[in-house]
Length: 79
Image 1 (cartoon, rainbow, N blue to C red):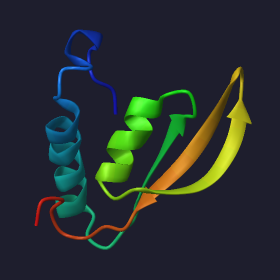
Image 2: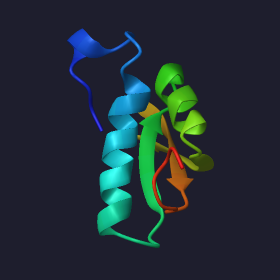
Image 3: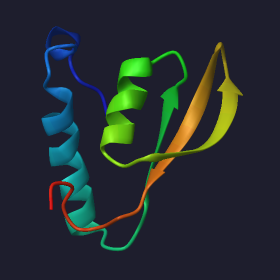
């Protein structure tokens, strides 16, 4: 997921991610959702935790460390 930089830090992240997650869940019932996020991206990690993603693994690629996060694929984030 990637939001245009003009819209970051303005409170749009939760709704933006919820829309994407709900679409994934509707089209892939029962399959967990997995993402990777750079460990320095604290705001994104906080948002993903609010969306009920759980930290699973860490790995290093190129010049950054990443966390793999997984969310069980339940129906609709806000229900």
